[in-house]
Amino acid sequence: MAKYLLLKHYNRTSGPDWLPGTNVPMDQWEPDEITAHVEFMRTWADEMAERGEFVDGQALEPAGTFVRYDGEGKPPVTDGPFPETKELIAGWMIIDVDSQERAYEAAASLSAAPGKGGRPIHEWIEVRPFYGEPPVVTE
Amino acid sequence: MNEDLLRELTPQVLGVLVRRGIEFAAAEDAVQEALLEAVRRWPDAMPDDPRAWLITVAGRKMIDEHRSVSARNRRELQHHFEPDPGPTEQADDTLLLLSRCCHPDLTPASAVALTLRAVGGLTTAQIAQAFLVPEATMAQRISRAKRTIDGQPFARPGEVTAVLRVLYLIFNEGFTGEVDLAVEAIRLTRQLAAPTDPSTGSGQGAKAEMDGLLALMLLHHARRAARRTPGGELVPLADQDRSLWDTAMIGEAVAILQGALDRDALGEYQVQAAIAALHDDAARAEETDWVQILEWYDELVRLSPSPMVLLNRAVAVGAADGPMAGLKALEPLDPDLPRYDAVAAWLQEQAGNVTEAARLYVVAAGKAPTLPENNHLLKQAARLSRT
Image (cartoon, rainbow over all chains, first blue to last red; front, side, top):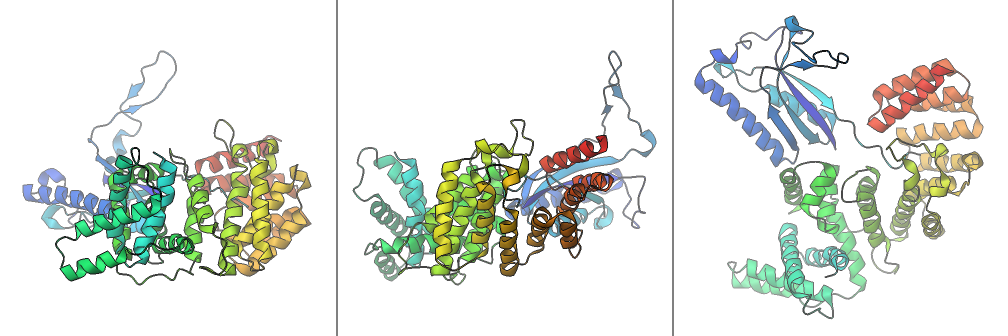
């Protein structure tokens, strides 16, 4: 059993091209399509919980701020180093599954969330394994 | 109220019900209710035979539950609770229950969760906490596991391999929570291995491997205090402060292992325990009998030639016959094996190839599946790069 973070890279300006018809911003969807999308996310989480695989998940506000230590007396807040290529991480899920294959399968199913016209949005889901605990028996 | 007693009796009572053909989920519910009843009543009136009391009360709870079923079914159900089994059946019941919880149709994670719940008597909340998942998720995992095994043909009680693997998993995963799962795994294995009447239950081979696994767990558990620094960093075997090892536990484990080996039915857990015992036997790392350890690895390769065994054997070859021999033993193995680069790095370092060793430690750190290993390997790389 291992935990994976699924990062929903909703928007992007880099990487492979959008599949045709899937790059429509959410504000241009029909209200029903937004409802269907939200419903899909809820059902997905419910099904993962029912399988005993769901750990946590949250949606994130689109606006974020980059913060770092820049030395004593310097303001710690910036707009971020990459304003032109800013990616939007729309949310994240943590799942606890039996295998990497299962994590990929779950991520792919999440990426099939419906968008404009009910078509899957094919958003990128980044799958990042958590570090586990070292085994006891090592020899 | 003796909580330990209840936890010890829980799987026995459940085992009796399951052996009598009661559906697993229903039996478990009934046992839980009987336990609640015990918590309420025992402080005032402790029964003479707590186990029989629990079986009777659980049986009554099940009959209450089935008020709506036909009179015929009810009579059949009542029949299940008479008469009480003799003591020789108890060991079989624990094994039977474990076989059920470790059914081959279950994923390892499900089998582990169900075993801890039904045999270990841990609460769903405790198991969820140990695995760092929400309680609702763990509850689903357990009830899904119960649904999977209900209606499945019984695993034969003699099939202990799956049971031992699940107990090993519980021990080895190094979970760090409020509930000590290593201790829990040892407790369950001890319970399984306890009966010594060879005329009942499992055969010599199964008994030898139960003892072998128990010895293996104890031999590793004895080193626990030395395995990490107070700050949580990993301390490899060679660098451990051996005065922190629990010598009494090692002594007990060696005696158990000796008994297992005397049964002349060698298995992989006994061999792994023998290797651990040889390490535990060395007062200083330099005194380790690597030649004998290598002989046991050859035995382990014969019994269970997994890639991980071959990788660990390469370490033993390196220590017994020198790093060049170790690297040669590594050659036929798949470089994508977990921890392959860490072994290669260590062997290269022993061979005096410091630059290559440092490079490999960095590669190994990048692939390390756990943070303490990542930190440890980075420190090795840093140590070599500095010289």
